[in-house]
Length: 318
Length: 259
Image 1: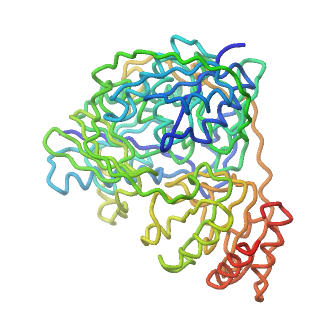
Image 2 (image 1 turned 135 degrees about the horizontal axis):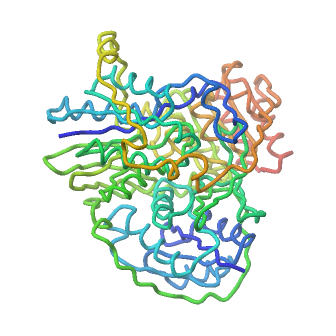
Image 3 (image 1 turned 120 degrees about the vertical axis):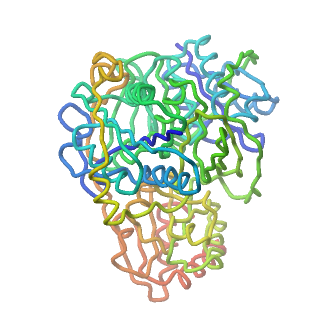
């Protein structure tokens, strides 16, 4: 079986869930091998091995922290040239897509982004995408070179497949271009202690109907009762009620959790573009005509300031 | 200095989109508009010159004949002129070929700074800016929430889940901007009238030094094998809160095994 190269993502030293999802999907089309950019400690290697990576390639270089995207793309390209995989899988994040983009150009290959499913197909990997704001499903294939595929978080349930992993350090000589976009400063955000928004199985979102920054404490309370992540609509983040990094929608994040619970969110098309892949949608809004009710599996027409606290209380009891 | 802003004419988001028989997006079937996310790129180019940068602003697009409307919209907001790469051979081009054409057009037209949006609002891939930068061998400084040009250096701040980064690069460079850079202006009536008179240069594939076999459906490195409309989400149960709304939600969540 051919190798499938999976680019590893970590947060706070831990391998992120979308990486485990990709390793799981990789097993459908070949033997997963993982690529770590940065130092790989024993825990990282053990996790990757647990989810089926037979080899863990490691490129450890300061360039990854000091420069944007290009060193990462050059490292992936170099390892892909050595490994000759059946596909390269990268998480569909902002940086992930740009790394994948540059790898595709370097390998003269096709690229498919935002895959929600992978299957072996008659002429290579068949990739499912949800397109046109979720109104169509397309099955596509790369027809030239090594398929470069970015995979949406929450596309698969990670399945352990323990194996022995050998660690292979790889040296990469970076081009001058790799050192051309320099990171001159970094500000770290406080971790919320909640799941990452794009990875979370449950998302509780607040919109303009929440009315204030203070009211988002209600959204947080429901999220915590469900063990979920918090999100906000653009209207709410533009008002400064919640951080922009929590915005779901066309100019924010696209999420596809098992449960999306929206309070005070009208459901404008730009917001829907970011969440209509959610498996189950619950909405609370005082406007019975809010478009969100057209896509909600369950809706309550009511005031979020009474319904959400009551909901939090009920959930906290259980 | 020459700033070139890459823009795309996309199907109107509120219209119903579908695949044509050749499994490409049927662009002819619906009205189009300048991609909303590209308006932020236009706005940032205009703000740079309004803050004192001595630069001409040129809008560049690749698209069918109708795509000129996107250029006219950009020109109505401000800027100097536009370039439209128009060629029948381009139909069915994938992102890889699109980046090849745009890079070739940029080399033909010349530039100091390329500004793009963060993604198109039709394919939403977010890959073309990085590909164009790679092909031109220029720094890519992407997902900017703030943008400044200081002499021959471009500086941005970009935000992510984990925090912010300040990034800088020497010109010539490519920058992509997000909506965080600030609201895009509405064109004034005067701007719309002036925009209609600004020059739009049409370039064919040959004009940018490319052959037909490098682009279009036949050259595409990926293909849609099949597509089907997704059944629209059905509206589920909607109840009016009479003090029991929360309890009903919990009932629903329990039945669906979320609690």
